[in-house]
Picture 1 (cartoon, rainbow, N blue to C red):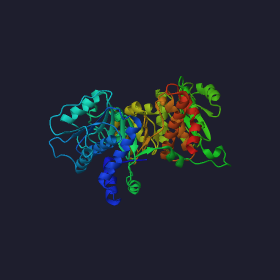
Picture 2: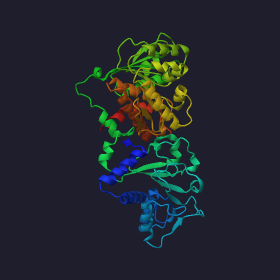
Picture 3: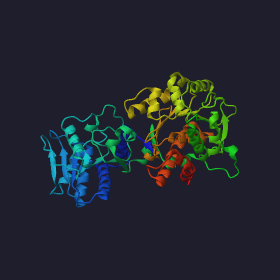
Picture 4: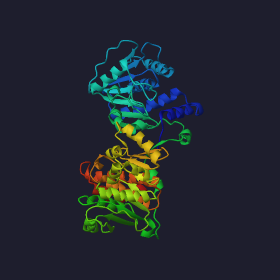
Length: 504
């Protein structure tokens, strides 16, 4: 799914009006019908409802919702903010007049001083103050109203976006000056801001309402941001030939594990095998021999010359994919081995966990990471590599900059894991759940991505597919074990089921 910027959405909206013969008021009615249906499906007609409408078209949406709720037997209190008078958009004015034509409406038009209504946690607030057209942070009376609504602890439904929040980037926003929605009903598209962790408490649950903007223009409008969904991965993955052998599915080398951290190598190699790699070799310290041979007998053990650490990363054979990092530690001899390897590597590699921590000790090594390699940092690892970031939004913007500068793919792990490409495109992953916040989950991801790449998929495709499969396996595991009970081993174990589910 494409995720459009605010300006792109406005252009699609204008195109729909100009080329499809749809008036702006008709679009407002479509929005209101969708929002009203959502509210009716969740709350009964005896629910205390307060509607706050601003002077623009977001306010017009809210007023139309109020009218439709009244027609369905609800009795909302409706407040329209027209500070100073004559500030309403033409559509907002028309929406107000249609509302008032019902007669006997609990309606207040605020043009000056205003006594705040008595809100409580028993209220449902419909927030139609400001939508995606907002240009500046809220100040004055609107800021005070937003704070009051937040402090009331009422349930809040925001139309389009929470009032005070910008659709795309919010670098200097103050959260208490923005509506904290429990439910955000986005019009036609999710907004970029929804996928950034800083905004989670503002957006709450979100749902997209389809108002049938021009399908042609949506299709023809290029996007920089995308949401990766199941069907996207289904189109990517290839069905296997009935006459194939393991030689057709590639070989991969996993450099992982050290004394006391061999579990990372086990988890990663198990996931790689479940993800379909034809042959998986594990290069690790000698102390891992019995562990690997007994825990993952399907893998080939490749011994380092050192008993407890990795000191030599030399590929004695050709591999279709190489992944380095899970559990290798950050001992100087391991850092030296990684440096020697990177300075001679020509093909893309996957770098995770301690490989990234090793590079953080010698940042100049980033200049030697092969083009289109994949790195998979969580927030802490990212900040160690590229410097501390003040927010999730700043971290994502930095990732876009660094992916372009080093010509690599960055998988920035989180709730909506972002796959950042060198061309500036960002793909947010839709699978996964909080149960996956468990030790070793990242090691499983590394194994899956490497296995996909070993089977002949390009790095950018392997990153997309690997991240989604990993999240989907976590969803399957959570359905069985609950969000408290999932281990990384469960995610690895369900990787094959996840692929089968996607391809079915």
